[in-house]
Length: 152
Image (tube, rainbow, N blue to C red; front, side, top):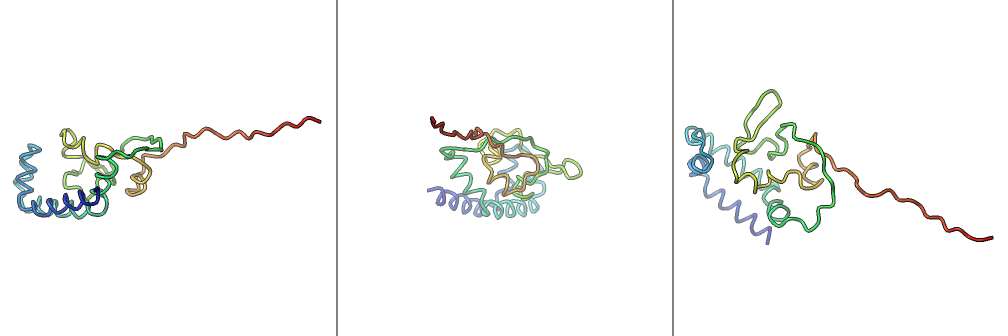
């Protein structure tokens, strides 16, 4: 079911590329997507290709479906490297300084229900984007060997 949903999303996204600038401007209240129509279409195409590499399927399997059990305990904080934004391919990613990026739609309620709002969900997310600031903490209790006592 998740694979079918991911393929349907990608197909709909490709079909909507010609209206992507208008949609993005309308949904996120940012005129720049419409002003740079051709650039936004190029970015939308790049964004969709990056989604095909795994994030669309990840969304339907893990985020929307919520893994039954997320075993890892993850710590760290965002350093705005942009790696998790589909390796800098997200059409909403904006430069925020040298080697720093920010989400152009961070305050949108729609972002919170996307992959972005759940990053990182598990160690696979951290590894996929080579995230330098989040890490998995082993929360298992240390094993204490129990040695049977024998009477002499």
